[in-house]
Structures are given as C-alpha cells and as structure tokens.
Image 1 (cartoon, helix red, strand yellow):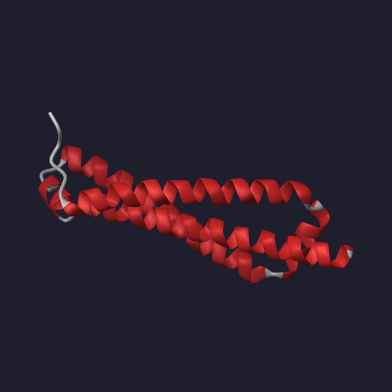
Image 2: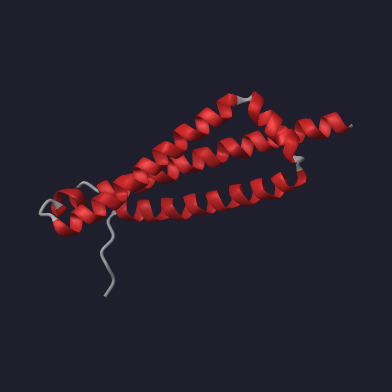
Amino acid sequence: MVPELNFFVAFVELFNINASLMILILCAHVILRTNKLDRGFLKARLFLNTNVLQQMWISMSIAGAAFAINSLLKLVGVHLTIKDLIYNYYLVEFSQMIFLVSFIYAVFIWYQFINKTNNKKLSIAE
C-alpha cells in the first residue's frame, strides 16, 4: 500500500534530500580544505574573526533547539491527545526544515571561512 502524499509532505521530503546532499558536499569540501591548512594559521584567523564564531554558535543553537522541538513533538504526538493538532499543522516537518536550514547555514559559514583562509594562505605563499 502506497501512502498518500500531499504537496507539503512531498516538498519536505525533497527538501530533506537536497539539504542532506548539500550538507554532505559542504562538509566534504571543508574536510579536504582543512587538511591542507596549517592548524596554527587556522586558529589565528579564527581568533581574529569572532564574527564567524558568533554566527556559528547562533545557528548551531537554533539547530539544536529545532532538533529538541522535533523530538518533543514526536514524543507528545504519540502520547497525548493533541497529536491531530501537531500533524495537521505539520509542526514536525517545520521543525525539521528549521534544523536543516540553520545547520546548512552553520556549515556554509565554516565553508566560507575555510575558503577565505585558504585563498589568503595561497596569496601569502606566493
């Protein structure tokens, strides 16, 4: 038996697939670039640029809160009578999307920082 998919559920599933692929690609790129950089140089650049740390902590905090809300909604949806409210308004799907968007933003900030650091390191070496 095939479950019935409405537009929003299909959109969320496609969004999850695309977001997961984006996270994988960005993380792989960051890992490959980080291995080529000097750790001391990377720490010094990160120490001088507190904006990157602040943005990453904010986005990771939002992602953590969205993950906690998602887990709580799933637990409440199983045990309480308000599960119709939770599933009719797609609250679980919204919390998933908030988590993915904020996590992608955090990884993208780190990706930009690594690329800027790598480009400056290359220009210094020349």
